[in-house]
Length: 250
Image (cartoon, rainbow, N blue to C red; front, side):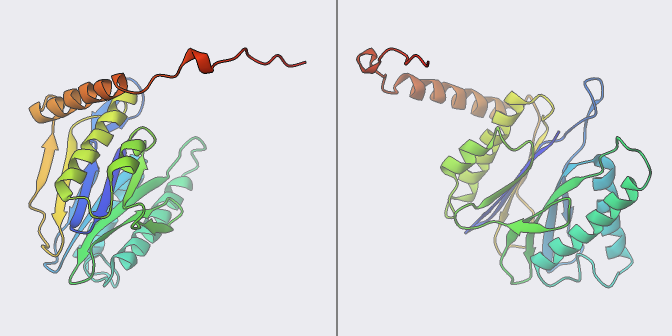
């Protein structure tokens, strides 16, 4: 299982991913889900991937090959991020179809991607590309996207992320979201990758990789747990005086 987050804010982007793959309890390994495409100087594009590992690797290999061979459409030639997302969706669908045609009835080739970054002077942004090839982007009301095991880490994102949240606040929020997911699902795990992109910089120079035993990650986890317990202890109690017998149905 995988968990990845992309946050598109007024001041830039925050991208977070775990690095664990799970093909059964006896087959757990580490594989990064954050992939940077930086061959063109006027753009920075990052992919986050979730789903079938064979499909995601095939898609990423094709993207790199198209750049190297200067295909008519590639990540270095598109003008807009939305165009890049459509192109990615087309390649993903084609790779899934080839794997599905292999005849293995139990094989699920589906993969989901987040494409984020900035091209030239166009606005920075992020797109979620579904297995079917279609895509969505963020909004002012919901400035983040998730792929993979998204249910455990969603509440903290909903509560704290706004379009004008600072990049480092959003980074901490994403790490808490990731920790909540790792706590509830053992198939999501460290190393945790975090990338903060400052708008219009066209530089990927603020990257973090947190191992399971990283001191900051341990401190963040401990303080979040302690503060939650403190907040819970101060919640108002309901009164037994407001109760009544359970109604008995006929």
